[in-house]
Length: 173
Image (tube, rainbow, N blue to C red; front, side, top):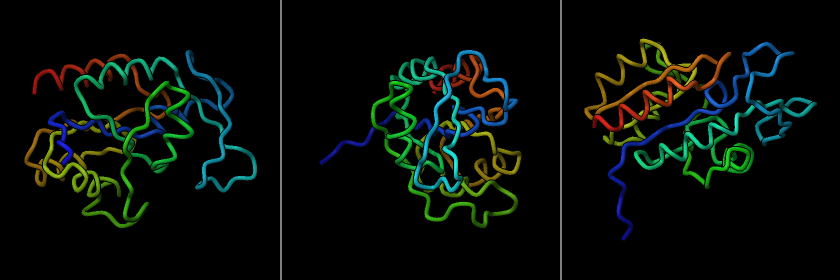
């Protein structure tokens, strides 16, 4: 029988937090490297351009002492193939969304309802560029454990302040 972790979950989106896709197209953000990828969901004729900052892997590995890291991205398990290796991350569990981009309760982001199902009452922090006030309200009403919803600007990606907030929140639990 496998013992379930008592650590809070850290639910990680890729596009926005790790890949600042909304940054100016012609200017790669400082510290990022450019990668060309063709995940199975990509329908473009040219490979998808993805910017990743290797330092984010160090930051996430450091947070793994306080959190159980989980992919919460439309890349699903493919994040382990396309994203994790560039950041030096081990294989992580991923949320297998029952439906992507579907209907969501009362103006919430489509992921929010599934995030709560996955967390199943456990404390969690979630980093995503699509979190809104509606998501905060929904989580407060429907999740009894502690939760940190960290909105990340998709032009900037995760910043030092985001990592510090995640570390401080986990330490305060």
